[in-house]
Length: 228
Image (cartoon, rainbow, N blue to C red; front, side):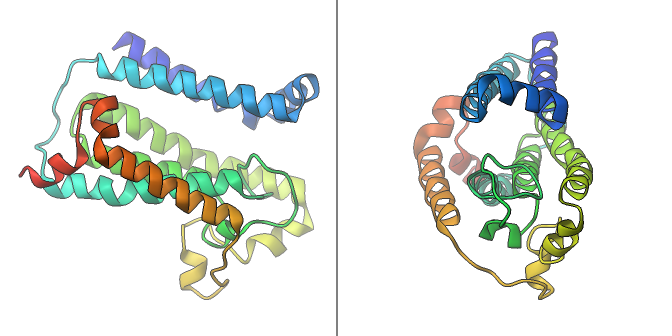
């Protein structure tokens, strides 16, 4: 459990540092934007791998009885979350987290102005429901709380950075996913990053359900969804 908590703490600290402008801009000025994002992505993947490795070595302590409907929550929530994360990263989004620069937001921003954070929270919450044990509650619950807790900070940063443009850009979107679409404040559009994110999500979901998830995490979502 100690290694698991240490790995989770390292992951949270690693993803908190870019939120500090002085540190982020200093690293970008030293490494260059492309090298910074490449190195940061690599380290993030390695630390995330460490988190899951440590979690799999923690004793299983059940908290509630498993059921098929819980697995279906994950089967539905996880692809939506992954799609939002990828679309958010691939799209220009001055309002929130993105690896691309620009002033005109991509199409995904019409769904939510924080697609990466909301998507990560949806993905994590889906896994909390289906994994009724202590380590999963700490792991995925921590991910979800971290993502949702970062939204107010991102809102504050965007307001300060964009000034008068923030109101004009934010009024056509929403924090809650798809709320602006349902209330008629904006219209659904499409673009290349959205299409790429949809394609990658579909391919990744197919691979995971075809055996990738079982190979990596020793659990088959489809078996769990039909086992009870």
